[in-house]
Image 1 (cartoon, one colour):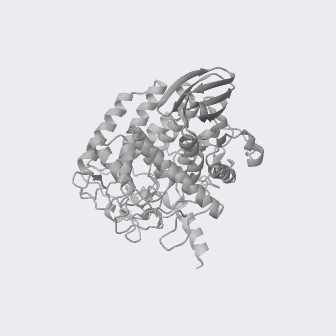
Image 2 (image 1 turned 90 degrees about the vertical axis):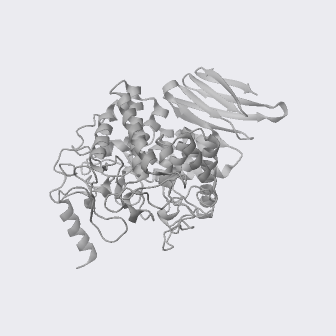
Image 3 (image 1 turned 120 degrees about the horizontal axis):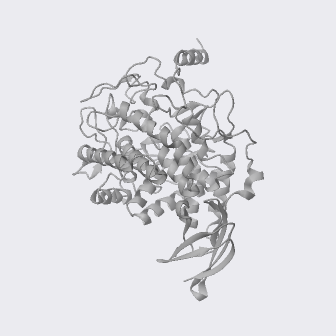
Length: 546
């Protein structure tokens, strides 16, 4: 029988009888009316336009990233049941929750003129009554990716396993009862709960509390579903190959081992639900803090190795596994690590023998036997998603200089590679300035914007130009580091459209700033260790700072 026929029959079999539960019942957000998709050339003059005389190559890569992103916008259709235009990873015929969450982060800078945070609405309206959300949904039909549907109604299992051979592999619960009823999805579909993080990143640009109220119940239901089905008896959370596809850690997780990434992500999720409840005045923020602290204690008890001074996954038997991966750094973003543990992680990021490579941060430590210097996907490749996690985690613990150093190395590497190859790639090699390659030497996906837009767009504006909004307080933070003219025209936050230009006056040892805005806000400028605050009225303003 021909392979295409086999795949077609398999898809019918996997889908048959599936998804009979009610979906999308917890999301009360807006269904967006049909409108033409934005086109790059027609929209370019509305997008934020960075000014960075120090390195025009970064500006060129910024615009290339947007050009590619516009090729990957899509419409909802009656057939797929989606409710908003969306940006897609352009990886295959499916939309991916993990990818989409990171894509919203760079789309935030053009909120209101490109599909961004509302791309996640298409996942909320496909949420199962159990609270589960599939990480992968067919773009045409709106149905969960067929192999991830638990059509057998078995207890939790991984259909594609742990890179130890053909699946499926049953998940064994140690020290707790098997949850009932069985999940709607397989373990392959349930990884990386980053939705609340994406929502709060968006909130920093928009200050839209109504959005947070609309997504609160779907997020809480999602959290509870993961807690029900993925939590082991020791309180930690199980994962499989889908956390990091071909990572050398995967065989050690088989059958119910727990991942430091998913466990720390659940701490992060709980803390972010507490923040969300505090912003919206709903729920009980202290409940989420208690849950987060309890899980963080278990992670530090079971997953921290005091001799190797690093976090490791745990096997089903509860012993720490030997493979050192980027998963450990989720403990920073989750607020799991103590100050001493965070210092040890920071040292590893600077260590050239492990994670401090030419292009940081590799997904697998360079001193592991499974490391691949050209990338090898999750055996060493540099991924924009996990780099973003590392950067935000470092910022949370006060390691702002290292966070910026990693971000700047990434955007310079992406710009150099874009200049030589003409495009942006799915991931990158850690030990050279080159696109990533699979283990077999094949190149990864090109034109990947996709989440790879997060570096040349978001990192560029935040770490090179220096702009970081705080919409809830109507403050725009601007850290000016460039010795040359820098700024941004049409920067968007909190409903404002603002143009800012900083021009150093070298002979006078001061910087001249020009501001134009359609609404009042507070500008907080930092340069050479000095910070000033200025109340900027609607209109135009000129000022000098030391």
